[in-house]
Length: 298
Image (tube, rainbow, N blue to C red; front, side):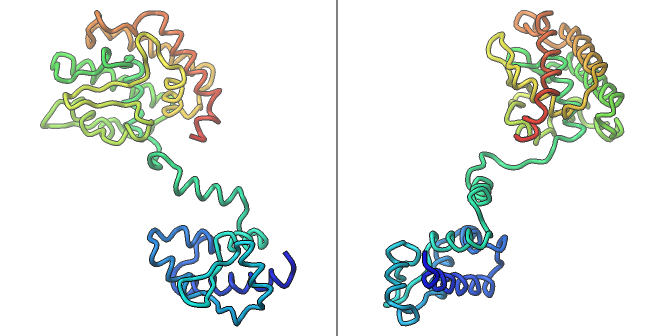
């Protein structure tokens, strides 16, 4: 583009820039991003209309070039022209306001994210998740069923033990009474899980709660545990911050809790207490450390 054409394209851009700055907040110093932030069409069109220029303000040869290169376009008013998205992009790229990477990053964050950004899991959620992993509630056939009053005390014991283990590893700091509660109206474990309403969205839908007071982690297909999903869940709890000794410490704890399965599961359908799954859990603990960078980017 020759200097004369670029000069007049800058005039279009500056006029629009000033209009946005007068009427609303300029986002990231970018006209293009500011216009994309406007959710409805009418206000955007109004701003463009207000920043249009008459053909009498532009040399004929320049206007022809700008139109042929689709840098400006005719407006809905006679003999008026406005800058296009391509024209804005040309100027902002030239001024180093935007580049391909920053524009794509903005578009991804605004329009291509599935789900919602969430906060990290809490200490309470870590205890719940750790207890469920250690007990191996990995399918609908191996779930926490709190309708069975006889199992409630054992589940509470599992979460108590999980709390103590995470505290000893300095993974959580919150006091037990504050974290696990002391309900006067229902069993503590019922209170703990019934009010656990945000965990599902925080761990990509892997935590399931049915309407029948049943809870499980959806990380298996038949007798096959998904190593990737289990590694991700271990990372959610420990953030990849485990020493070699701590890996053994956690793996042995999971074996210990798994042995309590006879008190809370139907052993005719619960298969995950078999010794072969001990190795799967240990490998996933290790992978949660190796894959730390990957999980951090998710």
